[in-house]
Length: 275
Image 1 (tube, one colour):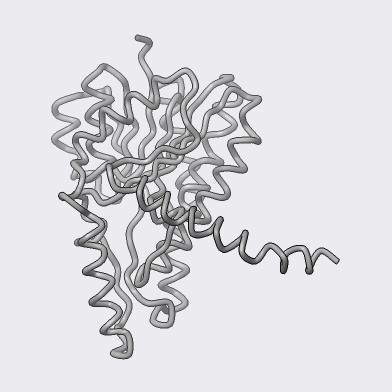
Image 2 (cartoon, one colour):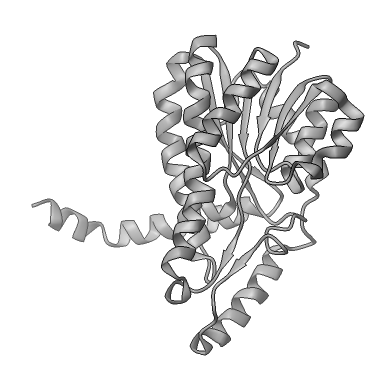
């Protein structure tokens, strides 16, 4: 198999780290970004020059472009880009502050867009490339207490679907990875929280219980997801969207069935509005 060059954001832990290891283990090269590159010291020791650790805050557009260019200059190609950096923000919509919402969008949406924009000219020139956007089941459905997070992922879904149509003619593939619950620190140390309004305490408790129930038999294993990523990047025709985990498909079926039912029930109003 031809050696590939990866650029992965958010590799200090969770998905990003596991996917970087999977790529390195099979002989590929990885430009691995993290806010603190000391978290990658063990990988540098093990894999040597095959890994390029890059300190990066994805909300810095100029730094994103510089990092992508350095990866290309170092390895001479850029085959796979994975926009994995992001975090979850917890808070009811009324509770979310302006800066909190802007920060959520800056990281989860704009950071991914800036890295994507930096990679596209290189991939266009090569005539090939694959960009994977880490979205979520929360990118197609929505639940209480994570509205800001949903906003960022729904936006990422929309811009990525448009992008896929724009770059297909250049040999560039786009894939939205939509995980369910996994044993990452998404809801742990990396999560952000708004100040809580007691008016929502009962709903908050219920939503946390529902989130636990949606996890079903337990959260997915980030290490196991690496095999799924390798299968996607090696596919001749990779999917635009793919769920990770066993639970998202049932959530999606219920949600989309409900939407279709509502649209059909109110179709007379749609036609009324047509004039």
